[in-house]
Image 1: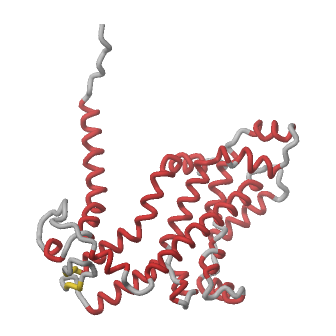
Image 2 (image 1 turned 180 degrees about the vertical axis):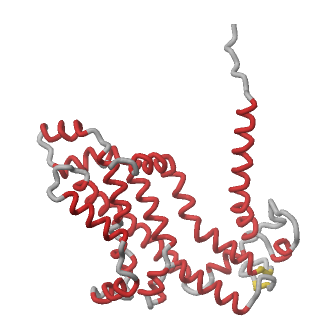
Length: 295
């Protein structure tokens, strides 16, 4: 006798249909941006829905990458993101693990101290004066060190560490392990969800953050991608409008609309983060939920 086939209910059909429609609504603007970035001026200026370019061209990307020192800025942004993320994750772990121990002397005092610093900041001028007095102006370190400690990340990771079974640590202590060995060999390996979540948040912050580079960096060779893209689009806005064509940089010699260039800059700006997200997405929700509830 054959296996009983599960009956598909009306709810299942509506549920799947709803999620499919929602996915299309979310993905269509992104796909439209990709199509626009690979289209020429004639296709971009025509009315209607464009799901596929009439002709795939890379002139918009060549135009963007030929602007000023954008390649140097791209490398600077990648280096800043990688170094800043490693620093934030390291400091977050080193601060969160001691705060997760109820036997830590003055634990409540340090927790309240961190919380006060999270809710009340000095502002832009004290931050600038601090960076200046430390001699970090016009240095790449000014984009990394001031944000190395994030109290919100520390609280999330601290709460996650508090959910770990204390018996694991007690067994390791009986076997002669110290706290540093417990942290590196036991706690960190079983805390991948919250570590991946914090790493993703830190990477997105450093990749998108541009204001500090605008304030602290004067040397164009040390600036970041977002500043160069901002300057490029501002210059194009002043000399063109959205219906004006600019010369394409590719071998095809086609013209580009300002909208083509804007679409290309969007794809270039978000590309690395979009590529990284699928690898940490499976940890993302679990890390947030567990790290946000424990008191």
